[in-house]
Amino acid sequence: MSDGSDGGGTGAGRDRRPSGRVDVCVIGSGPAGALVAATLARRGYDVVVLEAGRRFDPAERLRRMERSIRPGGGPVWEMGGERDAFTSTGRRYPLNAARVKGVGGSTLHWQGMVMRLHELDFERRTREGVADDWPIGYDDLRPYYARAERELGVAGAVDDPFAPPRDEPFPMPAFAPSYGDSLFADACERLGVAMHSVGNARNSEAYDGRGPCVGYGTCKPVCPSGAKYTAEVHVAEAEAEGARVIDRAAVQRLEHDDSGEAVEAAVYAAPNGEEHRQEARRFVVACGGVETPRLLLLSASDRHPDGLANASGLVGRYFMDHLFAGMGGRLDEPTRQNHVGFITSECHQFYDEPGRTTRGIPGTDADVGSIKLEFLNYAGPSPVEIALGAEEWGDDLLSTLRGAYGNEIAVGALVGQLPRRENRVALDRSRTDDHGNPVPAIHWRIDDRTRRTIERANEIQRAILSELGAEITWTVGPGNTGPAFHHMGTTRMGTDPEESVVDPTLRTHDLDNCWIASSGVFVTGGAMNPTLTIAALALRAADHVEETL
Image (cartoon, rainbow, N blue to C red; front, side):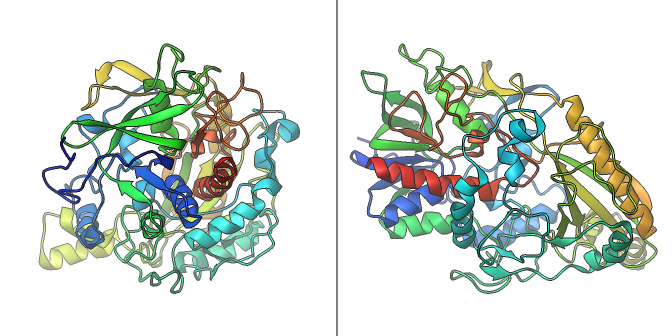
């Protein structure tokens, strides 16, 4: 029997044969899968993690940083090609622009912003009459949010007057406001706009064996120093506790037992093309909001002709994302742009009350959703990018750099998108990946409420930049907005098996031994970056999995 090893690259010669029947098989090694694996391995359970992508050597980070800032440097994390093919209809969805297949998942290149959803986000139907309420509330996740902040290592301050309640300080002190934030401060104060710190999953001081941020400024797509959290931290911890992580093990389908009520094995392909079956007592699918529904749909059988966990017909439905709204321009003074590669200040004043009035911004009665304002420190290209793309040298290049860099400033925002049944992840059977499986098809459109919310965000941004005295040179509004690549809603949570895919513990309604740990379980998405909620839900799910073992 072949050992399933590949012929080169990181992990060459690795034994990819399955283990015997284990306690838990986790599919995916992003933040959800890694946290589930580490939690259960710590508690003495036999865990195997199957990851479709490869392991990336931390020593490669500097080279990847160089690739990211060099024009034409190519994909930083090797996405693209037949392996990662997809299609989209409606508004074009650039799926591969911001996903990673590899040990650590999307945290390899994420921005690292972490904040809790608001109490309102769990009760949209009750409070606003839109969408549906979650079957759990903020208080159910509150202790898990605190655990998630400790696990990831979050730097922050309790200075946000609009934040939901919390009982404990952040694990690390917040990063000091950037120079750009100091420029915004007076203008925002005059307008009655409250600025405050933002939680970051990066070290403001040494934490958990990792050093503090040293300011490379290329956090997205790569942190060379390792100060920004990646799920590799918990993958390593899981392995230290005895878990086994098999990389380049692309799961092709899940197979159930004769009753059709429990998953029996995950069938995965090794790099040499040979298929293996990993059996387990419990399965946790943690492939994200796109690959998780795709895997369930690919696992159709005679007993489950529409795909596993899909008796409701909702697997892949209610796909949501956050949309970006932004505005920027120039000041007649230096702004020290790009000296910090992440956001240090935000404004959540328009989150629960997006139509509110301030001293300098009129209110609105229009039906709009939550808005999260971001004060951007990294507007415009870096001087390295300008220099590498220039066709001049010496004094001419220096003159160009002085004229094109150093005085840009911007305000960004994330706005929420309500779940809509027609927005979905499906299978495109007209196109296949490198294993012959139908690729994911993204059906996605932006509704009128989202457009109005983006317009409201632009209105607030314009007031701030005008008060600052900036020359506004660009706007991202309803016509040219794009996604934040936060894939949510495709395996939604609920108590009614006919209206949801998983129950409040994240166990699938249709399968007794299968849980889904992913932003796909979100009932609504709010406008906050989702990773801290993903982590909190994963920790909660791990506790419930353990209760059944």
